[in-house]
Image 1 (tube, rainbow, N blue to C red):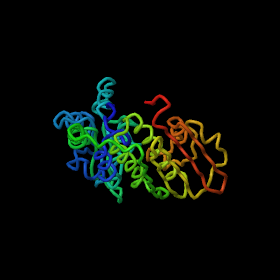
Image 2 (cartoon, rainbow, N blue to C red; image 1 turned 90 degrees about the horizontal axis):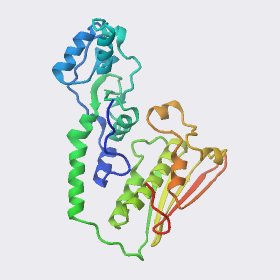
Image 3 (cartoon, one colour; image 1 turned 90 degrees about the vertical axis):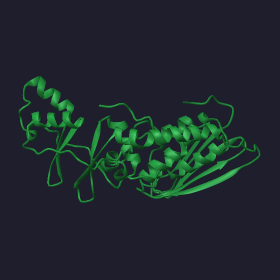
Image 4 (cartoon, rainbow, N blue to C red; image 1 turned 120 degrees about the vertical axis):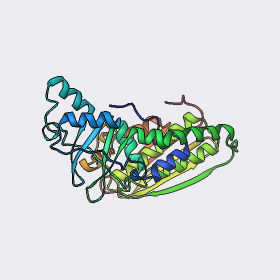
Length: 309
C-alpha cells in the first residue's frame, strides 16, 4: 500500500498536465527488472527484496508474467511459517497490469485508485518489459517539475484579464480515444489561468470540462466540447453524436454507469461524470433521447455562489 500521488489530472500546473497526457508509461517505468521464477522460494524472494531495496517481485519466465509476490506476502509467510514454500504456491496470479504505450496519466490513476505500490508493465506482445512505481513517477519526474513550474508561475504572474473580453474554444472528441482524452480540459484550463481567474473557480470549470469530455469518450460516438468565456461566466457545451440516454434521471445518479468491464479496467466509467458536472455547475441543462445526440450545458458564474472544493 502507498499514499496518493500528490499530482492529478485536474489540479496540477499546465505543464504537468501536458506531460502526463503526452508522456508514455514506457518513458517513466523501470526496465532493469528484478524477477523471480515460480520455483524460487519466498525466502529467496525476501532476500532479493532486501538486497535491492524493493517491495515487490514479478514472477516471470521467458518474459511472460505469471504472478507477483509483494512484501505483504513475505510478511504473511513469515507469520504463518511457510516462508520456504515456492512462489508458485503463494504468488498473486490475478495481477493488474499496465501497457507500455499507455499515457502516463493511466499510471497515476491506477496508483491512486488501487493504492498498490507497483504495477508490472507489458508490451503489445504481452511480454513483461518493465515495472512502474509511485517512486518512479514522483521522484524521477513529476514532483521536481511541479516545484519548478510553481516557482516560475509565482515569479511570472499572468496578466490581468480584460473584463469585457470573451473567448470561444471548441474541441472534438473521438470514441475510446483515451490517449487524447483530457486535451480539451487542459487547454481550457490553460486559457483560464492566463485570464488570472480565481483558482477555485478554475478548478470547478476544469472538473466540468474534464468530466464532460471523458463522458463523450467513454459513452458516445464522439462529439464536440465548446467553451464560451464571457465577462461574467463560462459556458461549457458538450454535444455528441449519440447513442443518447434512455433515462436521464438514472444517468445523473452517482455510480450508475453503462461502461463495460474493459472501460472500467482502464480506470474510467465509474458513473460520476454527469453527477460531478452538475455538482460544480451554477446552471446545468441536459437534453437527450435514445438513439439521438446528447447535449449538456454547464454554466459557471464568476460571482454569486460560494466556490466549491
